[in-house]
Length: 259
Image (cartoon, rainbow, N blue to C red):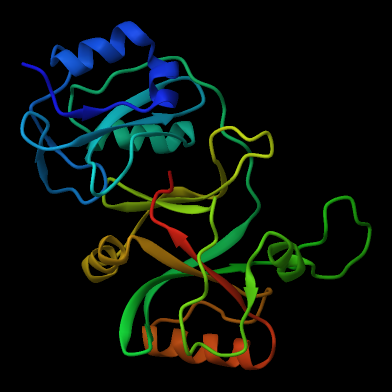
């Protein structure tokens, strides 16, 4: 039975025309599935469904998602993350050869809900464990914020409104967990991971619901030692306000999963 599948050009290029056509014909695609983003049931025979190809170091897993949750796309992950995906995704997953994911900087990431203009927004707070120097620099300074500002992130002096959207960047929320922050590829190809979780991070149901509602996540970044690992969201907000007031905070709204 034909399926209501979306197979993007980049997914088709990875899996091949023959495999893509078999999926569209319903030969290899499951009728029912658990959405790889929101983890609720889906049915590719009756609703638009995206094919999402997770590429690891040696293999890849083809997963399925509601088209309203994720677009059809190729996402690079580590082999360790991929093995976790295999345990989470149904046994109908397909495997194909794939390329390695890039190495990432060491960054601390905290998730939380932030109240802005009377509405709760899902947020990620990124803070390096140590100062980050500009690539190729021999200095001892911290260029973390200047590097992000050069990428389009906005300096924030207060959190009175959500920061503008940073196009080309995105947050990968898959299998109900936080996997990566993606940035545009320097070569203009598929997005690459700017930050990847060593193991997929759990987020609260409220955070995931807010992310699906807004279809974007607010990312805030501060220099090492500015925020810390706050145990409660109200303390996290206080730390963000202090960092902003001190000129040590940048931010952007990142689309969920990207396109």
